[in-house]
Length: 228
Figure 1: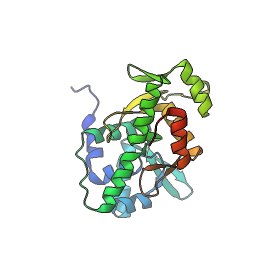
Figure 2: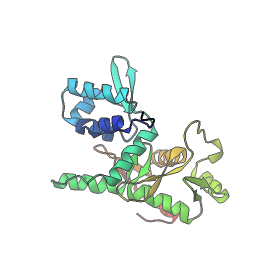
Figure 3: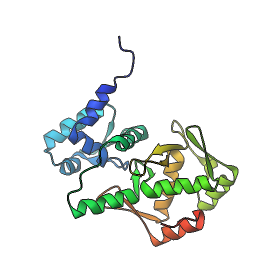
Figure 4: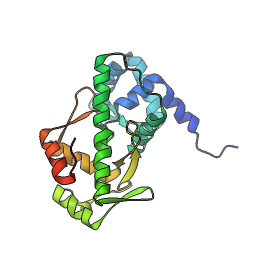
C-alpha cells in the first residue's frame, strides 16, 4: 500500500497545457472570470469550464461567486510557489516574435509571484536587504534583525503588527528566471504592497511584469543603495 501523497494526481492536473496556462495567468494572485481565462487560453467556454472544475476539485484553485459571475484564483501561496519552482526546471519558452521577446525581458526584469516581487527586481531587493543586515537567512526562513525593524518602520512597514495567522512570515522562494531567491510570505507581500501603494512600481496590463517608476528608482537608491 502506498502511504505517500498522490503526487501524480496533482502532476497530471498541472501538466495539461490549457490548465498550465490557467495557473500561470493566475500567478499574480488576482481572481479572473472564466470568460477571460477562456480568451487567454484560446479555448471555448465549455472547455475552460471543464478545466476549471478539475482545478478546483484538485484544490489548486478556489471559486468565488459574485452575483451571477464566477471568479477563479489560486487556492493559496503554496500553489504559486510550486508553479514558480517548476519554472526553474522547465525548458524555456520558445521566443518567435519581437513582442514575445519584449514581454520576456519585462517579466525577467520584474514581476509579481502571487503577491510578492520576483524577477531581477525581487531578487535584487532581497539580496540588498541581506547585505545591509536588514534580514538574515536562518535555515529556511528570513529573520528581521533589530536594525531591520527600524528600517522597515522608516519604509512604512510595522513588523510588530504583522498578522500572519497560518502564513509563514518570510521565506526564500526560488526565482525561475534568476535562479536565486526572492522573498515570499507575509513580509514579501507587505513589501510588494508598499511598492504599489507608493507608486514605486506599476503593473503591466498584458503580463505579470512590473515596471519601476522614476520615484521607485529613487526610493531603491535611497533605502537600499541599489540602482536599476
